[in-house]
Length: 528
Image (tube, rainbow, N blue to C red; front, side):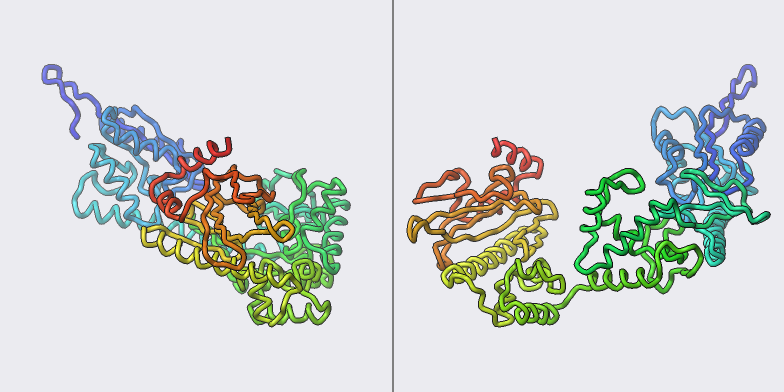
């Protein structure tokens, strides 16, 4: 865009420009001062006046996401009140080292479309749209992206070499460990406090056992967990009962215990490259065979024998049994005890968990049938429960099919009877027959779950051992007390007549027409 000229005096008004300056975290020579000086010299030589300044200091040029100055510049360019017509950048790499060369070109085209030209003051190509200039820009953009890839490879290889030499690769040391600075020139060692780091490139950092009270506590964690029947939850509860906090002064959680129990650094093994996020890509878990593992790199906190025993127990807990293994485990419990129920299964640690059985079979009764076990229950109550369960599954299938026909995404969890609609609305479907007082006077009770969240409880009533449905009750969140049993109807009298419906048409219409914000309001109104 040519400069404005005054025909009487011959004075040419300078073009108004914005300058963009960036320096990434790598140690490069293109400092902001150096870039500004080069841009100022170019502006003076071409009658350009710099009116705006944008700087991303210490920020990588791989993506636009974490570059606030460039984002603000692109927003200002689209503003009709923009006060500049030129953007001055030192070179193509300062504009960005995008791994897709078209991304850098797109942002430059966005500026040009708004009438603002991007000029690279240190590049050899001309400031025009000729084929030669386009080819040179594309080549420079590709070279800028390749430079980042090459640096990434070199940095990763350097870290691998240091890890294989026994040095710490970075990150917090962990509870019971501490970082130690090693001066490679004189061999001196010095413990590093939190937020202290090495200041010389020749220095190295290793891990070592931390304060005695922390290392003793870590050993106790391994010993407690290795004992028969102890879980990570038990260890965390025991530490919290003693009033012992974790490394950041908070109560222990089971996941904190498991992180310590699984980490090989407590036996002195240096492990690196378990996860990867190169060139600002998403984090991914790498296969075990790609890890870099160096045994004996640090002084151990626990012995190899104790650590191996804990790992075997963790592996057993992590293993998910299949249907045949569950059946075999149930039969072993029957051989030992002669009976089978939830209390017995929870008492034997080697038995399959109740939750896993229900996920696999849908209910404990289905599992009992698979192994030919007749539970010691009232035969009539057992038949009622079978009828309830079959009716629940039938209602779930019919409702899910109808919702899918209307374009909804539906998932049904058999072990909890929860139906999730569009990954947002959660409904629990239950079918219950009546209880009897002294052999007569039927009544129905409902229970709102207290161990997982739902939005509606869909409660269907049937007569004893009769699959024919009487009616439905749609209870929104807040209408029933979680965990408590509530009488729905007794002797033909209901306290929840407003929630009663003849069929499920109302819940299907609700998913079609009512947004979730209105649902939340309705829940609060019903609760009041």
